[in-house]
Image 1 (cartoon, rainbow, N blue to C red):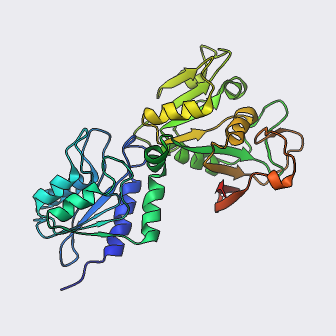
Image 2: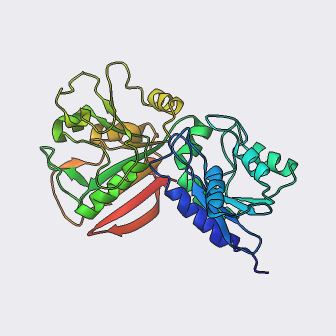
Image 3: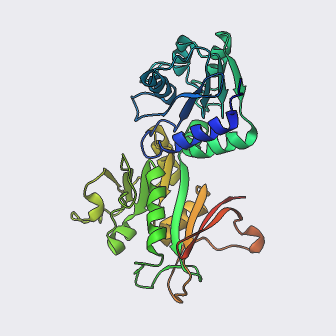
Amino acid sequence: MPVPDIDAALRRALSLAAQAIGLTDPNPRVGCVLLAADGRELGAGHTQPAGQAHAEVMALRDAAARGHDVRGAIAIVTLEPCSHHGRTPPCCDALIAAGIAGVVVAVQDPNPQVAGQGIARLRAAGIAVELADASTADVARELNIGFFSRMQRARPFVRLKSAISLDGRTALPDGRSQWITGEAARTDGHAWRRRAGAVLTGIGTVLADDPRLDVRLVPTARQPLRIVLDPQQRMPADARILQPPGETRVIGPGRADLPALLAELGSQGINELHVEAGPTLSGAFLDAGLVDELLVYQAPLLIGEGRPLATLSPLAGLDHARRWRVVEALPVGADLRLRLRPT
């Protein structure tokens, strides 16, 4: 009898989980594949919008629709099956009731309400549970890096996006910046916006560029919340960022404490916060050590005098410089996409 290819099934489950980006927030993106003992795929699915079915239930429904009996099957799941009753019943119970014989978990759930309890409940029911290797766990964790951040740090994962020239300028001295990067990079930027629970900017950017900051260049099932920091209440009534689709929240005087704002957003279920702002607000996030990832699109052009990526506090010396490590360098059209994280 053929042996199930667990690695291939894990890759398939991770691909399904990626399809849930822009769909499931504040819940994590999860994929599930059900394999027969001979390796045949019986069912597959990914998590639906909050309050609807999780990946495991979707996979069981898919198997039923295909006319397959899942008793004795193996479930491959990208995140530990939940063991608590939230908006939906525990996925552990669904797998147990279906007669699943084994479960392979890519990474444990960081939610304190689960955090190993799902695996323990499955094992207590006589189901064999295995954990994937570290590299697969890393991929699964990256898919839900914001969910892990919110569960473990009580705040969103903060990604600061910028488009710069070769000489590090984001705009001309008068603020004009359309367009430093090409169409491919702009479309790619919308794909990263789609990941976010919220997109944040400052009133300076609104007044200079009148951006929409919605997701429109890539398909999405959900628009992220748009947040504008406006301490002096200068928001124009006809600003495009206030228009549909999506919701916009304007934060006024006395609400500019960035750590407190992140804590508030975390309590409201925001997993990933996407910051697209001018040099002052970007510098404030960086000076406060609140940026978890820089998403930089560098265009092959020189601007000369212009606005920087961020206005930072002066350093006493180069030994005090903020150090970053490159986690990705990828050509996107004519531009270069860089992702960097603090060392």
